[in-house]
Structures are given as structure tokens and as C-alpha cells.
Length: 262
Length: 248
Image 1 (cartoon, helix red, strand yellow):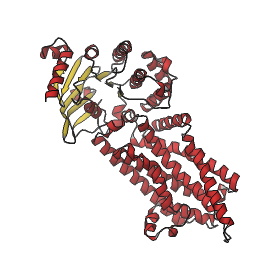
Image 2 (cartoon, chains in turn yellow, brown):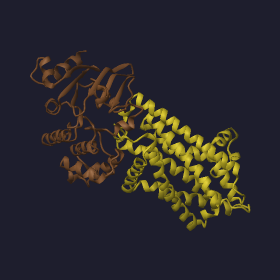
Image 3 (tube, chains in turn yellow, purple):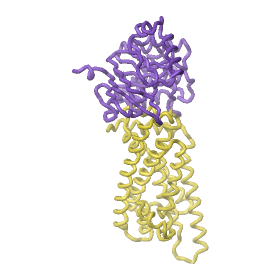
Image 4 (cartoon, helix red, strand yellow):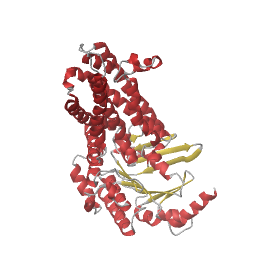
């Protein structure tokens, strides 16, 4: 493995971000819209509720933390898609860059996107709704770790699907986020899901991260069992994502699919 | 050292079938250090599939590829450090300037002084004026030239070019051929090139491998192949093989 080549992958994607204003929508505009939407919804529900506890912090914290997963996932997914959109995939495949180095570079560059999006979310949430991300405290770190790894895993698995089924499958890069959002209990506990879907939700490491987030917001200590389950599950998911995409890349090379992209 | 270890490229008995169609049927190719070899054949002969197998982008069903002693696919990354590849049909990364794109590829190839390598490579093919243009704003001919510069950035031991001058004006194509000959002479790089321009092949290569229907049908110097088929030059050989392939 070459750290130099990983750094160059990051530089390659930095050039793209710099020159593509619409890419800033992902890390600037959508986070802003999400805070306005979920913050307003929480405020409205709180005004019409007799409950002593406002749901606004849960909704805002939920969407903020979900953006960690979302940004990590699309950074990896669109990083790879960039090579297919510019028909550069064969050029990349004929350099010494390994699959791992390429994914590591896009994932590491994705961390920058996560930080930028979090900054946008934090400023907007405080400015409009007086919600402070710091209210979560240091508990944010293990929760963010789980969500980042889940995002990378989903992004890597999506690359495998695009390699196997072609560019038509790229809709999954965005679509998989909605699946994860619905099943991870971003805004609500898992037991609010239909009973048949709850077992699926409990398998996801992101569900445990959001359970832990709600516990902390409720004033409880960080639940160690949820974090442990989340971390273990996230690493299993990451390994499964790598294995799946390595398999798909083997199929891609064996069946000569590179000609689809060049 | 064995002959196989000394050759920069050794491909042995490559076979590839797509959807029950045999695209490549037992092709073996060797390229010695510094040797310039043409890979020719009519459309559908198996040239591109063979090239992509040599580069590790497609896995052969059977057979083996070894580049500078490194067997694919296991040692692909190390092998590719010694290979430069460009194709006339391949674009470059959108949204990057030429200098930036070449810097990225230089970095991936392991070149330490990227700026110097990029400047020297641009000068070699007399296109320094394109350095600050966006890749997406280049004409197809300019893009091809930059692609060839990309392939030579790291002084590879083997340069693989697929139809490199297909979209170039005659004067630019001549400049590219001259630049390639100078590059191979000065660095000792071997060249494996496909082209439909038989005059180009006669100018650039010392040996020609003719493919037809996924098999090697001739492997010799351009003059010897032309003589074997009873022609004065490769053009006649190509026309005959293309005609036979159509009838087959």
C-alpha cells in the first residue's frame, strides 16, 4: 500500500470539488435545507404538543448525525462514479493504484466533506433553532465513528453493484441513503417501525448509533452496549462491503465489463 | 536469467470467450526490452481484448501474462509501474487542467518530482501551451496527445498504445511518431502499438504480430510479412486478412 498514491487520489477529488460548484450542494445546500425542514417540523410539533419534552433536538441531532453517514457514503460512491462519468476508469485501472488505495483515498477525502457539512449543519442549527451540537458532548465521537464506517461500507458496496450492473445502478448511490435512513431509526426508536421491519433495523449498526444518540440527548450516559454493538457491526459491514466489491471487481474483469465504461 | 524473465512482456496462450464467442484463441506474445512491436488485425480480430488482458483490465479464461517479471493479476500494481498506456478513444478526467491531470497520473505512477516530470513530458511532445487548459476543453487530437504524454510520464519500460494517432491531423501524427521514436530510443522503452495506419506501423515498429479471428496469423518484420503474403507492403496483407475474416 502506498500512502503517496492515496494522497494523490484525495488530490484528484479535491480538484473535482473545487471546479464543480454543484458538488457543493451536497455539503452546503442540502444540509442547510435539512436543518430548516426538520427544525421547523420539530418546532411546529412542539407548539401543538402537551408533552414537556420537545422533539426538536431529537430531530435536529438525528439529521445532523445522519449527514455523517450520508456524506461518507456519497463521497465514496460519487468518487468512483466520477471516473465513470468522465470515462476515466480504464486510465485508472491501468495505473499502479490498487482498489484499496483508491477507496481509501476517496473515503479519506470524504472526511473533509463530512466536516464541511457538519460545520454547515451546526451553524444553521444554532442560528435558526439555538441547537448546539456540543450538547451531545464527547459521545459524538463513537457515534460518528459508527456512522462514518457504515457510510463507507454502503458506498463501497454500491460501487460493487455499479461495477456489476453498469451505470444504470448508480441510482443506488443516493437511494441506499433513504433505505438506511428509514431503517436506522434516525428520528424514532426502532419499536416505532412496523413489527415485521424491526428485525432488519436491529441488524444495522447505524440503528445502535442512533439509539445511543437518543439516550445521550435524554440525559443518560452513553450506552456502552449500543456503542459496542454498533462498532462491531460497522466493522463487519465494512469487511462485507470490501469482500462484495472485490468479488464484483473480479466478475467485472472476468466478463470484460470495462468496455462499458470506455 | 531466462529469456522469459528478460522480456518486458510475456503473454502465453491467452484465451477469452464472451457469450460463447471465442474472441481470443490461444494468443502468445513476447516483447523484448526496447523492441517496438505492432499488433495488427481487422476489426474483431481480438486486438483490444488482447491489449486489455495484457494490461490486467480483463482476466483471460486461460493463459498467463507477465510484465517485467511480475505475473498478473497478483502483481498487477507493481507491473503497472513499468507500463504506460494510452488509447486514442480514451478521454482524460473532466474538471482537471492538463497539468493537474498529468500530475495526478505521475503521482499514481510513483514519480516523485511530479512537476518536473510533467513539464519535461509536455515539452517532449511540444504541447506546453496546453498545460493550463481544462481537459474537457481539449480537441480530440489534443486529448490524444495529452494521453500519450500521460503514458510516458514515468519513463515506462513498456509503452502500450491503442490507436494513438487515429484522430490526429497528419502533421501532428508525424510529430507524435517522431516523439515516440525519440522517447523509445532515449529511454530504452519497448513499444506495443495497435494501428490501422499501415505506414505508421512500418515507420514505428520492428516487428508485427498480425491477428485474425482471435489467433496470431503472422509474426515477423513488416517487410518479411509483406513478402510472405506476396505484397510490397503491409497494406495488402491487411486487406487480404480483412477480406478473409469477413468471409469466415
